[in-house]
Image 1 (cartoon, rainbow, N blue to C red):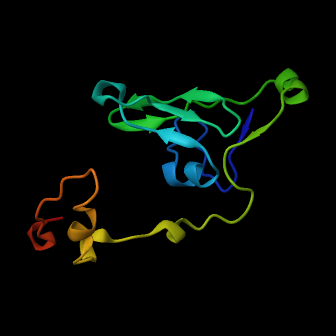
Image 2 (cartoon, helix red, strand yellow):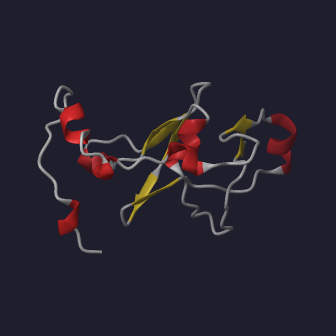
Length: 121
């Protein structure tokens, strides 16, 4: 039985989850499709693994209401913090950092030139 604090739940069972919010609480989240080498799963800090469904390019965690018996017998698993969620604390804009490509040159990533002025939205 999972608790998702500071969450928007759609009763039809298809709620989009914030990977960052789940990771902020210590969950491992791999929302990359299996067909692209991912594992489509969430692993909680206590080791419980939950599958993610990939539907039209978006990862979903299937949800349902717990039964009365489950409410009475299962230990709750908190998936997110029970406090105000501020997603902006993870904001970053490497596209605005002139030194970003130089900074990753020594990493395992292969930097390429990028001109953000070429993007059309």
